[in-house]
Image (cartoon, rainbow, N blue to C red):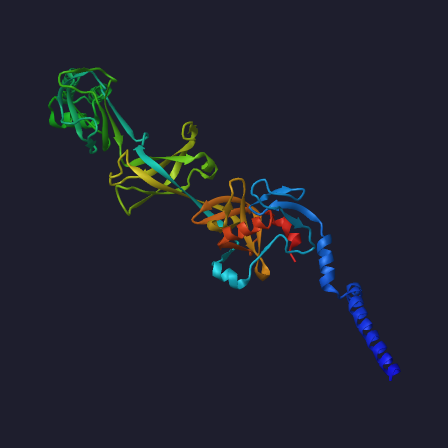
Length: 415
């Protein structure tokens, strides 16, 4: 009986020892098997090489060893090297992306029509000027009711001048006309012209047979009377400037273009002007001249635009909002301007990739117009960029220590 109990007890002890040994050996064997993922992954995680350490609040600053952040009272976080291709991207679940309101737009190619909105002020067209001078000595007998600043019509009378020299020449002309000698009459007519007598006045003397010693000065064009040097009783000399009239059939729009946009301005470029004095009215013109010098105080280029003014309502001194339109003539890439994140030193966009991944890409931008920005380099046609919520993605990329680089340098990392 005792032998049976002893055998049973020995068998039980052996079983317990065997079970205990099995539990102790099992983990050791599992760790040596290829499929032992938990222990192997932990070991692999421990053996990963840290590229650098960073403060999540200042991810742009990198440190070569662990420790406390000099910016915040917290431990630095290690950034490990990894064979994964997703290290340069931010992964967002599609459901979360929808809740964040992420919107994207395609990178398109086409002719980029740029426009520049600036201000301008109207000025007189200095090419449309009439200078009225005395052709012969005389005396001012009458001055019509005009003053500098008045708007005159064409052929408006300014003053009556008595020319004694004309009286003698006209008397001789009328006497020769009665003799019937054509040669002498032609010579006398030529003398009248040389004294500065207008052809219309010569015809009137010949037709009426009466001496006309008075000259009525008139404005040859319609416009603004800029200068009037006439007083009753004054003596005028030949060649003396008596009046100056500036026409209003066309005016100049002086536009100040920023120095940074000077390269986009060309002669013949179309211009659209809107005046606060005439709400809802647009006046079209063209760039006629680009002046050679710039304003040293405002660092602006002076551009002259010529505008037709058939009704004369465009008066010098009026201000205008000016839009200069220009098509580059070349096919360029462009994205919505809201997709571009400008840091002050560079510009970047968040590139949308497959499987809810987003990559910051540095780009070189060109002209901006009508809500679009030309892309000189950094993107390709057909790619998608984020136009809403891109700042959240950029912040997440910064927290992960992802540094934006050119698209061509990152293209090799794409799966």
